[in-house]
Length: 128
Image (cartoon, rainbow, N blue to C red):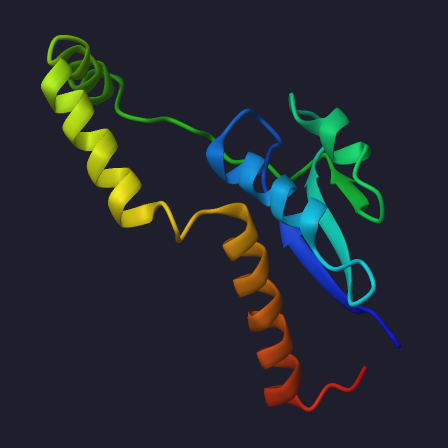
């Protein structure tokens, strides 16, 4: 059976949620069906983790960059609010676990991603 090539693009392998989630997803993909390639920059704290994933091809670029510039005042104000309000922290945590817990469980994300890839293959007529 021919494996399906999948290209993931992420600007930098830093310690972020999207980056960590992508590496977890790639780690748990069905290696007999999918051949993942990751296109990213040359650096990042998660690069060693990416290099250790069996079957993952890495393509590095010197030019794939994006400036990250969050509004610092807004973030610091919200963090201060959370630090000073324990009940708000608990409420936000409980709401997040309730509404997103099942959706973002790794097993479910891998299953949904593989189903999406298989649906795209069927819709486009691409044969293994």
